[in-house]
Image (cartoon, rainbow, N blue to C red):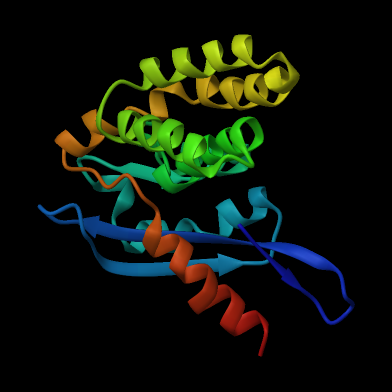
Length: 193
């Protein structure tokens, strides 16, 4: 989803589906976009044509790389219940950074020395080690425990979607860059004309 302003000064969430093939280098090829300003249930129904045209229902394997919004999971389930779901790594790293900034700012060096190993562990190693570290961080910094536990719950709920080392090993992309870029190119450019 991408928030855009209407002439009435009201902001609405335009929804977008990006479909592509994934090549041997985990690059997305043959990218197509489908965007609508509609509630997610209507959007999902309207996207059926694009999903069918791209052959997603008949593909041997499908992955859905997305941010953690619940409505996106509903759309994925409607079109390919068996799709491998991957939480966009950038969104995961952004959440980790939010925790680090809350706990370690204004000490940038301490933030960097905590964040970078956690980010790399999440991307290339064991997500459970990162979750354990977050739990320990909440114990060591009780003044930030509520914020940390909120993010910990977010990651725990999506645990199967953050096994990035495994996804990369299987050849899947772990970022939704083509979809995120489309928010600027497709949604923002068209809806702001």
